[in-house]
Image (cartoon, rainbow, N blue to C red; front, side):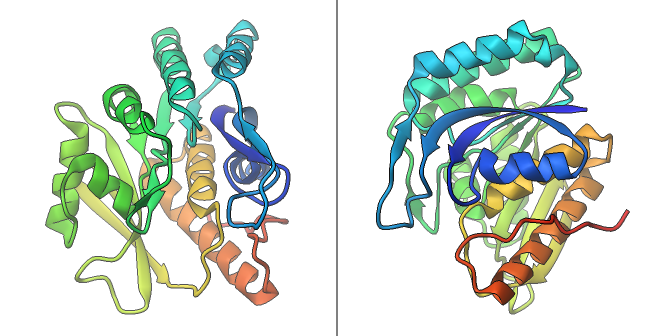
Length: 270
């Protein structure tokens, strides 16, 4: 079981592959982790070192993935934060080659754009996401803001969520896992992760924890990818991932840490 995961990497903290890779390995899945950025920490800190990697370097690393025949071995391909428009194009080129080479490969696109009404990625990335990465995806994991931005639909209730997912899919099937959702009928004090698969909704609500550490979306995507790689059905994969995320958040709150407390990774039910 192998997942190819293309996203950011930090020295300190848990975002991008620095959250997802450990979680996948803890679930018994091998990971080929390809960085798009290499930073000292996430931007919440007063200082930030490192940089977005050059597109030539990212392309070279991805060629190495192909030369080692990892595309043939992989069950799931994940893309997350790409860092720059040039990197987005390089990653899109790789995704298209990989899907052409391995027809069984599941492509999970985490369209990292922004949150809380704010876009925080460079100009030009959104266009590559819309026109190249999303049309190739089998599964996408946007937060509610990202889903609204990509679909052009305001999401207030389940009908709005279905419409947004349908707009994202256009004329082909793309399953959508919408994270951080608060709909009109979401119970007070809770937050939902909602799977829209072939027009059917599966809703997973957990109590809202009064902290917001970076990287929870990256961790969720990594966990879903790991469960899919092990052959778990999509609905069960999302449920198990949500359970683990909630356990991590509770432990993080109890510790008073600004960073997620991942180790050891909490285990979910069968």
